[in-house]
Amino acid sequence: MALQLRPNCEYCDKDLPFDAPDARICTYECTFCEECVQNRLHDVCPNCGGGFVPRPIRPRVARRKGVGLPHQPPSTERKHMKYSREDVAAFVAGVRDIPPEER
Ligand SMILES: [Zn+2]
Ligand SMILES: [Zn+2]
Image 1 (tube, rainbow, N blue to C red):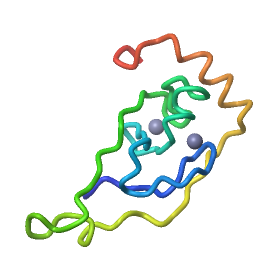
Image 2: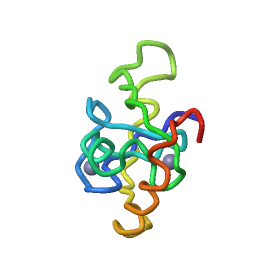
Image 3: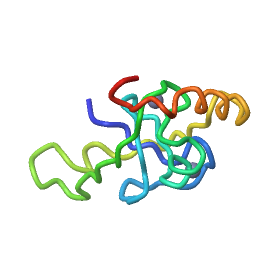
Image 4: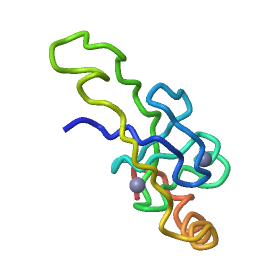
C-alpha cells in the first residue's frame, strides 16, 4: 500500500498538496506542516509521540508501470487533531526532550 498523501496539516489546517515541500509525516503518516512541527509540536507527533521526517514527493507521472500520482492519487480526506491544543502542549512538553530514537 502506498503512503497516504494527506491534504492538510492536522494542527493548523494548512493545505499540503502532494508536492508541498513543507509537509512532514510521522511513522503513522500523521501529517503536519513544517511550521507547526518546529514551533508547536517540537518534533513530537501529538498522536503517537514519534518524530517527523519530510514527506517524499510522489512523481506526478507514471515513470514506471503502475506507480506515480495517476495510479496512487493523494487522499482528499482532511484530518484534524483529536486532542485539544492544551492537551497537545502538555503531551509535547513531556516528550520533546527525549530524542526520537529513544522514545
Ligand atoms: Zn500546520
Ligand atoms: Zn504520529
